[in-house]
Length: 316
Image (cartoon, rainbow, N blue to C red):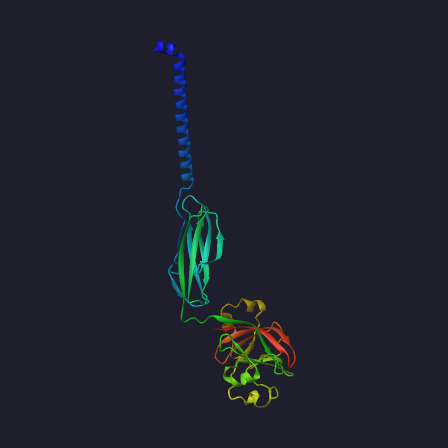
């Protein structure tokens, strides 16, 4: 062997170099493959799913942890318990009503307990969903359906704004309105005379009560409307009642169901007309049909040819 090496020294050396070169390439491929494998393992390790956080209802007084029948404007206190997956810190709690996010709670710990007050609206059913999400985006959710109790005292409202009525000598705008149709309908004197049973409100101005909202059944001065159109001669006189309110404009704007109106109404303190109306006055009203509402005066143009602009929220 020694002799061959010596005799073919150059050739063998070349062979050794070639073999060494081949060995080096093999090693490089091996090392590259190992690096790829390690990188893949690292990526897989980084993407490892440690599981989802958990969330559950905690039954308590007035809450069973299941779907519930509840009256409109009543509050249900719901207790939630959330826990991490053992690795990924909790990030936030997302609260949805009918699949729309209405509030989120930022977090940063491993577990928490939430006491949430849910106010029942006027929809027949409401789906409340609670989703807990951790820092890695893992999430879990639970849902609760609230169904309106048919014995609810409160309900939905209709909102009309702006409503503009003309005084008795305003030739450009009708001075009568009916809330018996949707949307509400305004009438001139002729139209109101033909539809007497539909008229809920009218607007006029005189020296005694100035800018006034009343109903055909109120004590309407005889000299306001001519001849047979004089309201005292009508065959039908619907009656609406009025009550001056101490609500603020902000209170009025906040009304979303009829609870505030119903709770503030008093038959005993109501009057037959709303007089001396001024901007930002708020009056409650009860129509002959029994429906109640709240009126916010937005603008008054004085005089018997003037007008009034108001917004009204009235039971549906």
